[in-house]
Amino acid sequence: MRKVQAPVESLTAAAYVIPTDGPESDGTLAWDRTAMIVVTARAEGETGTGWSYGSPTAGCIVRDPLAHVVVGRSAMDASGANEAMSRAVRNIGREGVASMAISAVDIALWDLKARLLGVPLAALLGQVRADVPVYGSGGFISYDEEQTTEQLTGWVARDQIPRVKIKIGEAWGGNERRDRVRVALARKVIGPGPELYVDANGGYGTGQAVRVGEWLTDYDVSWFEEPVSSQDPAGLACVRRQVRPDVTAGEYSWTLADSARLLDAGAVDCLQLDVTRCGGITGFMAGAALAAARSVPVSAHCAPNAHAHVAAAVPNLRHIEYFHDHQRIERMAFDGALDPSGGVLTPDPGRAGLGLEFRSADAEKYHQD
Ligand SMILES: [Mg+2]
Image (cartoon, rainbow, N blue to C red; front, top):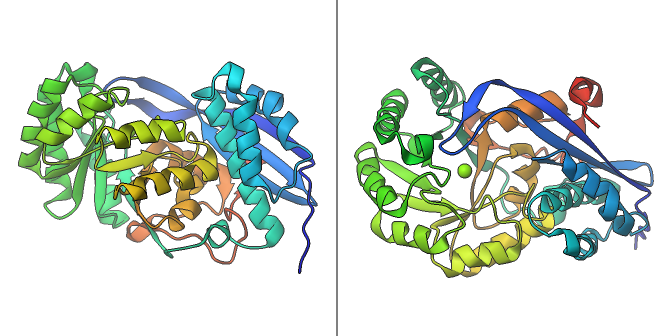
């Protein structure tokens, strides 16, 4: 039997702040840059890479306290490291930025473990599908008609992705008239075949969300994400009982308990999980199992290249969000970033780990600390 010792020798973090390719906004937030925190774990000459999007301060948490409980531990023990990290952040709060830091480290450790064993991460986790479906995601409220048309046409006609999502809920639900115009435009641009999804980012009130849900059916919208805040599982459940599109949420599930709250409330038809927020590969697998027990499918939120392998290993996986901003960053930052042509991401069976190599020289100009 092969014996692998491989103590983790170092764990480092670097933050990169990357401007968007134009102003971006949804119903409840506007932004012009995205921070990416990249974690590197080393053992026995191999390097594992993980990342999260959010705040550069996640890098501080990686350095202290997370590195203190990870360095020296066997690189084979990614799940044990995850538990140790969760315990180490007790007094600073397990959710939010700490959870982004834990997630980035966990992804790096799983990547490292798979590389030490010389197998793709999907194979290490137990692969259940070769290809993972994606949906094109963007459709920002800040886009004009021409930009929206160009983006949607690119996904549906050029990339042959049969499902797309746009943002609605403009101005916290204060411009429902334009929401409707933009949904109508999206359906006109993509034609009757492809699935059309919308994301309100929690911008509506409960009653308004139910009314919006009624007119969404006029455009055959089949996915209504965060019609109200995901901090209100009862409100989501109330909307869900009264509208036809699937109601979805979960991108702020930092812990298994957060996912349990959404599931217990009957709040979602599909649980969204973000591997860069929910505790990494370890947290994603656990959250997906929890959803499976309730017969609820899972969709991967953003960071498409961080999700491809774990998504291929989850039986109740519906699809990965191919988010405009993150796919752009990942194509710039990684050799081996996956192509969504045909509407799927296909983890490369010939590359170990996540199958990616971080291009630190290309990212250097965005380096902050
Ligand atoms: Mg969302």
